[in-house]
Length: 224
Figure 1 (tube, rainbow, N blue to C red):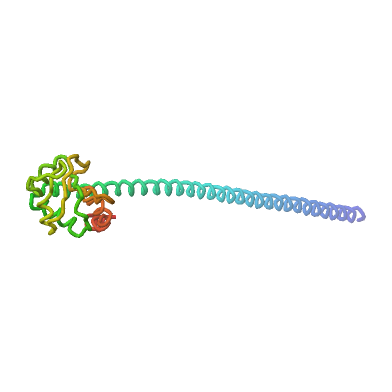
Figure 2: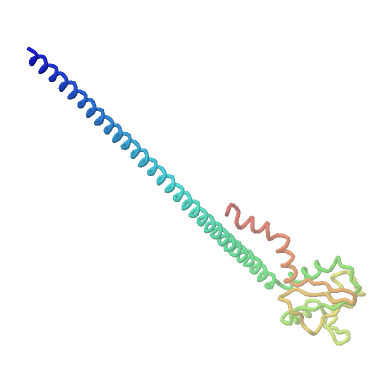
């Protein structure tokens, strides 16, 4: 009887110890799993953080690259726009010069009556002394002598008596210089105190200053 009781106590003690060991083992497994789970979560957090940092760094690099490209493109566009503007202005100036060149050709093709009217209109309102000398291009000398002189001379120069008559002052003694002027057409008035330039060159320089902007508007209206 005593032996049976002792055996039962022994079995109970063994069972209790086994249970304790199982609990300890289970706790160890649970702790290990918890550690592993915590490690996995930490690793995932670190991985996510690394990915996020890499993405942010890459975004910064892309933004810098975009800014650099934008700056380069802006500089290139600005340079292109400047070159295009310079070229456009050059073309416009060339076309405007061509307009005045054609107009000059028309003046050079003046008839005798056109020249007569041009000279009178240029100087009729000037305060002449009446002793001035006209200078013309060498190629125009004979023509001016024929149009404005009856063939008389004064001091070895052609007397422009017909011109004096056209100006309404018969006392004028205007003459035509033998030496020609370096002009493309028209004439110059050489006086004792000042000269007057009625050459076509001077006329068109004045016209360009006065009407170049207006002419450009007419020729290139709406052209950007």
